[in-house]
Amino acid sequence: MTKETKTRKPRHKDPRKESDFDQRIIDIARVTRVMAGGKRMRFRACIVIGDKKGKAGYGLAKGADVTIAINKAMNIAKKNLVAIPTNENGTIPHVVRYKFGSAKILLKPAPVGTGIIAGGAVRMVLEVAGVKNIVAKILGTNNKINNVKVTFKALASMKIPEKMKQATKQHEAREAEKKIKKIEMSAKEGLETKLTEDK
Image (cartoon, rainbow, N blue to C red; front, top):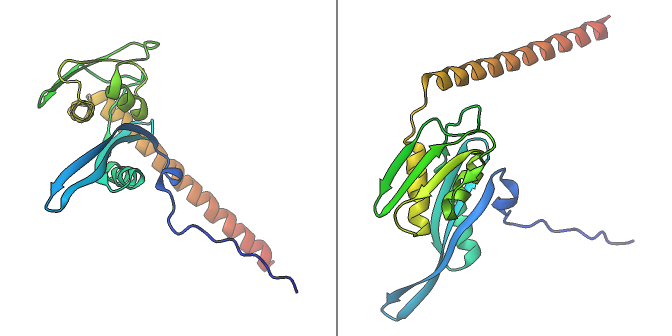
């Protein structure tokens, strides 16, 4: 008798492989804290995630190891997702100026074919969010984490025009109608199969 070799499944699944979000690491730093027994060293990670369809979020977390800090930041980012409005040209609806602490940012809509004209952490945020055409300028500090925070606050502060609201409502209504039709078709098919079986 030959013994069958069983392959063990990993206990902890990697959330980065399972998620449908695109992940970008903004910053990883080693931080120290002075304790009674000496200095305690930890790692801080700042991560941006997005589905490239108008949803993005950021997470900032610390951990004893780099992977622990990244996983913590990933979970925080998933809980803090922001919906970013874009029009048919893949750009934002209007100009935004925002200030958060020492960080200042300017976001301007751009025509089709412009691409993402931005630098540093702001570019990563816009890429994972799915914005295709935009012009951005950092006017304040060069701190990556503060620039990520001010970018998300600026995107969240945008006002959605009435036309875009109507378009989203119409799209949702169409999707709901499609789902209802699918359910009705499946119910009809089930009844037909039952009738044929009875005959």
